[in-house]
Image (cartoon, rainbow, N blue to C red; front, side, top):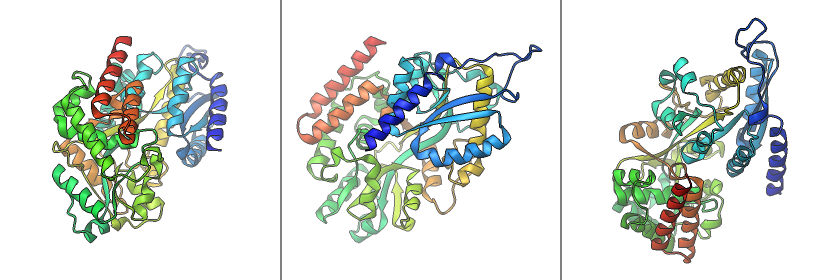
Amino acid sequence: MKKKIIALMLVAAMSAAMFAGCGNNKTEKNNSDGSEKTASSEEQVDITYWTLGTRQESMEQIVSEFNEEYPNINIIFSYYDTDAIKDACKVAAQADNLPDMWYNWGGSLGAYYPQNGCSKDLTEYAAANGWDEKFNSGALSLCELGGQLSGYPIAYNVVGMFYRKDIFQEYGIEVPTTFEQFEQACATLKKNGVTPISTGGLYGWHTMRLVEQFVEYYAGADGHDELNSFDSSWDQENVIKALAKYQEFCEKGYFPEGFITSDPNDTLISLANGNCAMDIQGQWYDFNILDNDLDMDQYGWFPFPNETGRMSAFTEMVQFNADMDDAKLDACMKFMDFMETEEHAAADLVNNPLPFANAVMPGDERPHVSEMYEYSNEGGTFTITDQAFPTAVADVLFDGQAGICNGTETPEKVAAAIQSAIEEYKSAE
């Protein structure tokens, strides 16, 4: 049933986009007196926006408030799940039928659009409107893609290891600060009948969060950066060691049985029922804990002990159609600025905290958010792999993870396959 719903949403959204995409959303740029039109004019402005289905309820509330202030701006939504929106936007870009705005991530996922001339370059707009002072510098820098500022940041995320405090305490496990201590903790948990790490291998991106930490550990910060920029070959000893460590964790049963086909959105369940002790997640996990009426006091977090001190990080943003004129851009920015406010963040309608400089942090009800942000500011970050990689290369890594788990691939073959995919990608540029 879920697949049918997604398919119907895709067809409907693509049909709508035929009338509101890249090449079909132009309006006159000047008023009769020759002045530039903006959305403050009374003329009706229709804006198509593709975003995540998890945001539907909050978006409907926000747009209802927005229309009281801007009745002439009509926001037309289409909703997708995490993986469907990636496919829908890519198909629309290739057909020149993108909406006016769409939700996206940074890295290679977002870079596809400026690289192919599909997204609006916001560099001049940002300079004119003080974005350097408005946004968190880390969040804004992750939106610089393809030689341009390619999006309006709506979230800045850092990834750490959440754990059950009560389970650690029961088995006398201290929070690990070294990789060796982390392995010892996993061994102790497994020995006592608790699966160490909750993960879902379906789609590949959740299990990847652990694999990239192994790469960070074996390659080091500089080496990892060179790998992610493709300045070093992935067919090397450090990558093979990282993949072999992942293979070892699979063989030792450090992940749930059958995890490779499990939905990554369901990993909290195993922590909630005590079957697993850890889950590698971002600061949004506090919200998930509260949203499921779990006891926040049972949960803690620690930076993965990769010996470099850096955390995996990524941004979420909204990109804009390259063909839009100034009137539409003005309308879009009015909506973005109206949506991304501390008031809406406090009401859980948008990401909390906002990716702004000096953003208000959540209170004691979400105790880990400010801690994770503070640690990342001090220790630094690296770009999460599925944003550092183009999709074609990330898919090879994801398939390799599954193959290693199933015993059909070796670390050596997967490392070589990743490098082969990189070379093919670079030759096609």
